[in-house]
Length: 210
Image (cartoon, rainbow, N blue to C red; front, side, top):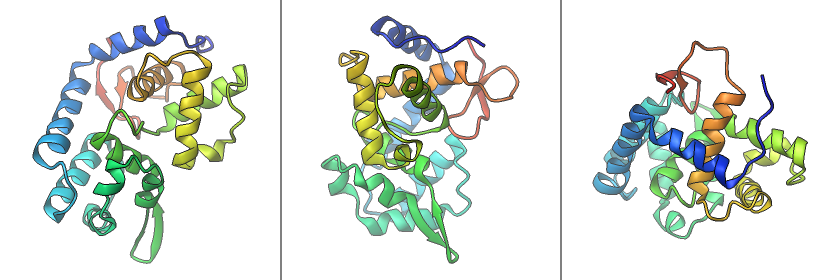
């Protein structure tokens, strides 16, 4: 398999065009946008939070087996002010939850939950983006981070912005860079699945590759 290409404005634009062709994924994101921005924009009622948690869990296959406990956890955090202030500490705060006496860390889910409230401010973390960032760190030394830094969301934001600056991609939003890294990462670092578009969590096929 060939090495990932060096990021450039033209390459990012090419992958964003590919993303626009993914009808199933676009409709899924539009549905989430309606839910998070139209129907349930705040996090003050358990019914609203539970609906958002459950829908994300279903669409992204985030393997949350107790969505009610996660929804109660988020409701208790009273997160709307922090979201409004782009508080990046919030992601790790949401991610860690005790369920039946055992501490869980739903880090990728927490990044998705915040991202769907403010997509241009909270890029999503997942395994494909992790692989892409580690690859470019190794090949181009764009940042001196350690792998564990990616699981600290404040550091993750710094790394994404460093990537954006190093490759002169300031004309693209963090959301667009996130989409590029995800889609390109699935092409260059595929899991051992049949041909198809894998989900941004477990690799479940959700749409045919164009």
